[in-house]
Amino acid sequence: MAQYYSTQYTQAYINNPTTKIDKGLVSGERRLAYAKITLTAALLLNDVVDFLKLPAGALVTDVIFKSGNVGGTFNLGYKANGVDSAAPAAWLSGQAANAVARTAVLAGMFKQFTVETTVSAVAATAGSAAGDIEVAVEYVIV
Image (cartoon, rainbow, N blue to C red; front, top):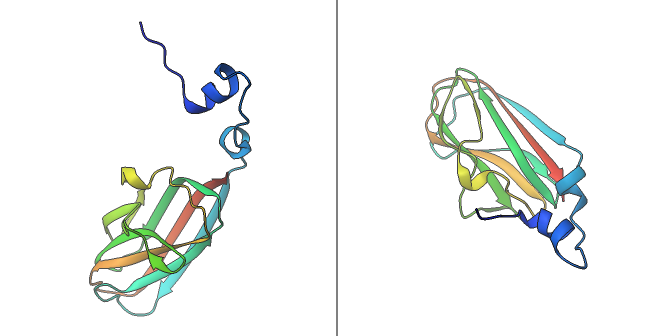
């Protein structure tokens, strides 16, 4: 039988001397950032909605996206320093409107940001109506 240890377990209990673990990883306070936009017209293909900013050091633990009956599909992700990330659909890709969804893209789960970062959505297909879109991001500061 093989024995394996997480990085944090190794730092705290195996290494001698021990290594300090980032407080946010073991006893971090969960924070929630929430934003809502009420669209007065349908979104067009590639329209961008910036929802909120996450602080430097944020480690994302969950993302929830809710859209009303606005039509179209969305990619939800992040921009660092105003520049699109290498993976603009980091959390949800091709999310249909009139639904609620949680983080669905593996690469975006537990993403940690070293700089202040903008959470945004891009219309992957054109919408058909006005309505509400809401986003909630749960994170800890590391």
